Structure formats: C-alpha cells, structure tokens
Image (cartoon, rainbow, N blue to C red; front, side, top):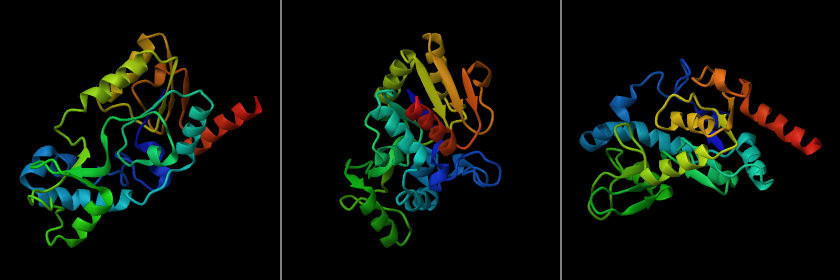
Length: 234
C-alpha cells in the first residue's frame, strides 16, 4: 500500500501545507478560508482562496514520483494508493486502485439541488462571476468543491476501506506526508499492529520515524526512481 500527502506533488509545482514561508498555510489561517462554516456564511471569502486553488491545480501534471507508483502497481507490487491530496494527479498518472480520502477538485456540487458541475465549467463560472463565486446555473447557490473542508467528516466508505487495507498490508509506503492529520495519520499504526512494516519518505519529522523499517528524507522523485532502478536490475 502507499499513503501519499502533499509532498509527492511538490515536484509538480504544487506547494505543500506546512513548510515555513512557502507552505499553503504559511501566510493564511485555514480556519478563516477553508472551513465549512466560511463556505456557508462567507462564500466570497471562501472562493477568494479556493478559486486560486482550482485555477492553479487544474493544469498541473503528474511527476515521476506519481508515475513510479503506477509502475509499482503495474508490476503487482502495489495494491492501492491512498492519498490525502485533492489534485487528481494520481488519477492523471494512471493509478488504478485509488482512494482519495479528502475528495478531489474534479467537480463541485450545489448544496441546494445537488447539481454536479465539472472542473472546466467551474473555472468558467469563476471567471464570469462578478463576485468570483461560482454558482449553480439552476438555483444560484454557491457551489461547494467535492473536497473535505475543515469542520467536515471524511467520507465514511473511503476511510473505512483505507483502514481495512492498511490493517492487512505487508508494507505501507508513506510518501510526502507529515502523518499528523487524523484520522489518516492513524493508518500506519494499523499496519504495524497488523504485523506489517512501514517505510517513510518525506522531508521533515513524522511521529513514526522511530518505528519505520526504512526512513528516507530525500527528494521523492529521486528516491522512488532509485527504488525502480533497483527493481529493474534485480
């Protein structure tokens, strides 16, 4: 199994969350822009932040780290990727078995009439709206991204499936995640309790560093590329 966080997408030009000075939350309080209550009561403030996110993420492409996981899956060595990312890059790379526990930017939904609007149309609505809030064409309600916002619960089916898979995993590759955001941060513990091992590849400390069978802090592209080279030469 693989569990990925924001760090795997940094080589694609997407900032992570916590790096001082450059992280997504370095200069903004997520509770003031990305909380469900902000969306409900101040959609202009919410979309002032998320509109830029949508425009930035929509044209990004997978990097070699994403493609490395696809090759591991193709070789029968990786059963599933669980990702905290909403950027769709694993899907674009070709990952077959994918659990997006925080949703994705693929679409938005209207809280009023449940109309689902694809990303391309959402970007058009953003550009056309005088207040930069994409609204449902049918009932004019502000559209909500199909992502898990602060203050919301994770999709039950997705997190339960992730927990089941991690509990039975022989090895869990933890890539580009600080392993601090719950309940996803508890997944490595399930693997360890089930008799499996964890390998951690991320820059910066995690709560599982001392428990990892392998701990790497290098560039995700270089490290996963080295893994593939070793497999090819074996």
